[in-house]
Image (cartoon, rainbow, N blue to C red):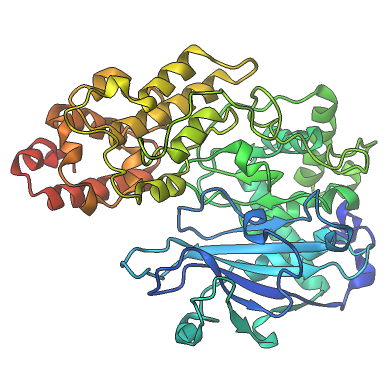
Length: 507
């Protein structure tokens, strides 16, 4: 086995053997038995420092799936100079909290906040130390103390004492174990061409590089192993997310926080220049041979890591017209008083770079009075703004957008219309989504089946059956299970024998 300190990203790491690393801790989630939204539940005294908007900076998509995964967050490009040495190791896990209405909170995050002790400390060494540490997180540090909290204060969090903050001593045997296991797991998941494409995407500044088609989250050691062939400067600016805990994935949104993300959903390949592919192949070959010397080729810096180019191209991973902030379609705006529940959908339709529907945002709009359904039962859906936006997006495709991505955006609006505009004519008007990755009943998951009532039945049983069959063909089993459970609960709430007979054999 090669000496771990021969890897470029660990240059100089040998001098830090025996170093005792400390961190601060924060817990993000929902407080059990309270009506409060997601918040910092608990944190140690130095957690977060003076960093603003920390919860958004650590966001991993819509976070609407309760899974165990990890992420490594480097300082962001617009951080102040004093905050440029703050790194975060994130571990997610299913939440067991229920809010005041008995609804599950889905996901909780344990976040380790580590500050680089000196400019020369190799960041890959810290990633190898902290990622395995954060991977086994749980809620024990706060669960039994929930009654102590002053939860009426929006900025309150339970204080965590120093003994709740992990410490790690840099030890050679442990480091060798993490590196060996990380490389083994990485090479079991990716062959050399795919691994070369990952590095080429990082070199080209694709943000994020989408590592698609995974069966499960990347192990935490894989994230550390991915840094090894990079230079110390490059490794210091890479933010890696092992898995996106989200039903739908929006590359442009993820690209605001992450250089690389893992996901189950397949997608189109990302194109990069031959020069980046050449070096990407060399880095992949180094890991494949477990030979650090193969990574020592003439290197162009990662786009976004060099001092001259501090920020990778935000939208390179999801080609579209314009640059950040999101360019607009200039759709006709709607009056909130006339069309309650359309606020987020208007933003999603109008913003060219938004490609994945955020069910959490949609659910927030649907809590407004009279928000569901979005039209009276006797009104023709053909005149509804949502139908008009679907037509406008089909007719006015912006220059430079990826055709598949744009069609998928429209399919999600179709799914929203099928749920929000229940009417005998809606299905014929907007049609079923054409992409199997956009289930027709996707948007039902933004509402409580017990509150939808019989409005959804206005589609009539044959149309509902077509929508349900389309949704059950979705390639992701966990989402199919969610839709099936939702429909079962909805049928029970309606008490309709006719609907149960028409749909029951599918459920």
